[in-house]
Image 1 (cartoon, rainbow, N blue to C red):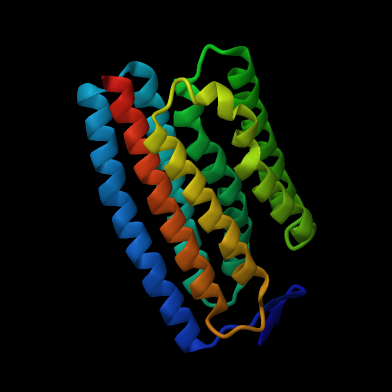
Image 2 (cartoon, rainbow, N blue to C red; image 1 turned 120 degrees about the vertical axis):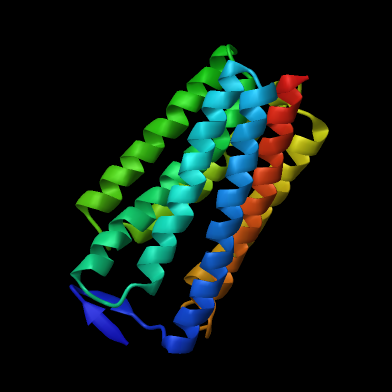
Length: 220
């Protein structure tokens, strides 16, 4: 185990390689999937769905890419700078993922308030992780989960603008993310980090399908 500036890094070479493979699959899949999504939104989507698709796509690729770099980078000052970006990018990914769904519900005032609120929390989280890295980790996890499940409050309103398939996929993705948190905090488990990121990639894939169905629905 390596400790740098009070933060430990306990993974051996095999664990890092396994994690890198999981990340590599996620990044390549995300690049292809986002290209397809933006092409579809450009040709057949509305202006709003195109903007939200770009926000989501950039958030997804940036989050997975930064996570990949952080988790395979050797322990050094650069790694711990990447750690700030990695933990911050999770906030951006959650808000970016919600954006296409909430955009579909505009101009409903409650939906707009939730959109502003979720991005406000995301920016607060970025500030928290950049200014005080390595601290408030439990609070951070609670904020991640609270942001992720905040859409439940708008279920009845989004039910009228999103298809059943989209809603079910959102729910399934949220459950996968939440189950993955178990492995995220199970630090003594071997390959814990790779397993956690496997859940992240799987959940991101399900939410991508949800975003795609949302964009498809907006073009019809």
